[in-house]
Length: 294
Image 1 (cartoon, rainbow, N blue to C red):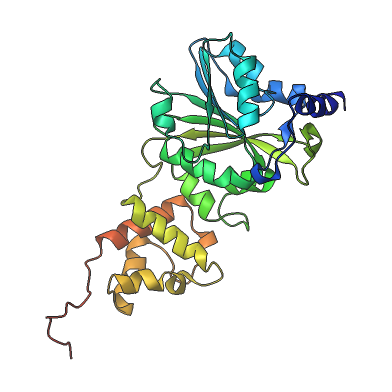
Image 2 (cartoon, rainbow, N blue to C red):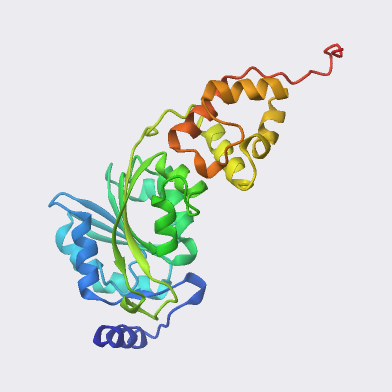
């Protein structure tokens, strides 16, 4: 309770208050902060990007352990507070702006950095996908996420939590749930609990998926109508390739997939096979100058 009061007083002293617009819930449990930084396993040469440092619950410990620390904060008032607090720490650089739009790969000078973040709930999934895009520069991330998002990221096939996010992230990352964080560890207290997740990104897909864009389209289409059988859910993609019903059945046979299965039954490798055979299928779309088929 003392830490929560201190967070409240720190905001008041700076003339600030939590902003619902940015989903601000400030971590105020020193023990949890210590565990999060420990999970980052930093060395003396580590470069760290902290997203949403807020009041700096993690920042002091990160600054003590990292060779270089970048702080990205969208709130101008908090940015000014952080800049003043670390003005005498030349290895700490404060960046004001939206993590979803800042050119992070340009602003972070070093070739590789670890991400540590207590993410606002309202942008957690978009940030994960931004990090997927930037995975070559930020190959590892320790993220505090709302529990339901964390479970979805790590979900295996066959569960209700397994979906688009699970497949697309697991295609490029090993996902590990590290530990739970109570809602009581934040000020103001959110309505849900959190989980700390470790993402270890890989530059190349973890299974063969063929064309990434087509793979993504297959996954999104399959889960877009997840109650339907694959042959129905993916009907639009098949039609777009001009594939007949017989050609579609042959495609599923080559992929080793039952067309009557549903999306949640396919593991990562199966989605990869399906996307590959679809990319290899010759287009049978009739051109305007082609003779009609009788």
